[in-house]
Image (tube, rainbow, N blue to C red):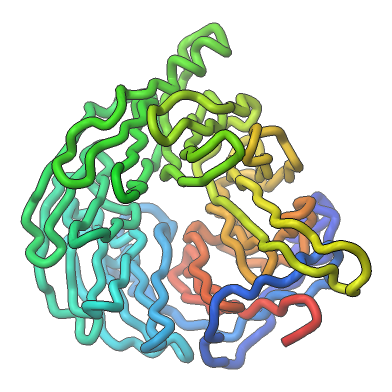
Length: 421
């Protein structure tokens, strides 16, 4: 164990190990199991079962990071992942053998979207374009230029593809042809924003978008007309702090939920904290203004279940809003009022969106590696030491997670749930 990792382990109060697995296992089928959560778990919960260099280092451009997120096709057992070498890769899920590679004009640091109905992949590139390719062989079906980096996952609904670029431009395209249906744009808040931006949330009657100038909007899915007045979260932050915030960003993709107050969406202002807004009119339902610096949100839920030992009454459904911040750590907030349930300090550097897996929560850290947490109390379950860190958000199916390290190595990580298989 390196001295650096030993210091980190002491900071977190847990023993963690380096990458140990070297064999290959097939992709676990089935949805994430609804199992009782881990409260105490020994080291060794995560095992690397797949390791394959993907990025062509000589062709890599931009930052020394691999952003984005892989996309999993569990039926045909494929993984689609972008790379800083300007390519989108299709790989076998069980051994990472390359099936095809599609070349773009810029790094592919995006979250692809796989459509099993048509067997196609939609994805964005730093060259400013959205692409639709055949999942079988990578054949280009159409390309649409948005004129700015596209990294967030597009959304496909009722025959339309919705996407946002880094220039605060929203587009709705006909999925079959790539023809533009409507667009909306806000002028970015240059000089008052950090890297990153939010993706779209699409429901039956609204498209919710968060912008870098601190505004949150709702549009009609068919024609792009406004469905509520713009909500200015930067003004909320200025009111609570008594000064103009240094950063105005709302970089978190909105999340829909239903709580005791009714339907809401969750968003996070970098300076102002985490908000729950009324889904119908944008009114504030609650705010936690201590959870600042948040760039990723995840809604976590555990269904009602019987106690593990069978003794006592059933355990009711539990829901938490998990918020990742590079400055204040990993937060768990109560969904009804935004109060802090727990908070875990994390190492310096970027922290990915927390991703539920087998009753636990997985995150990656830019400077270190991969961590597994308990959603109940934020306790560390396990960790993997990657010398160059991980920036990519884990992609999860069943007990398997796929993530690419900052050196361009694709990892398949198997997570053992409570009680073994």
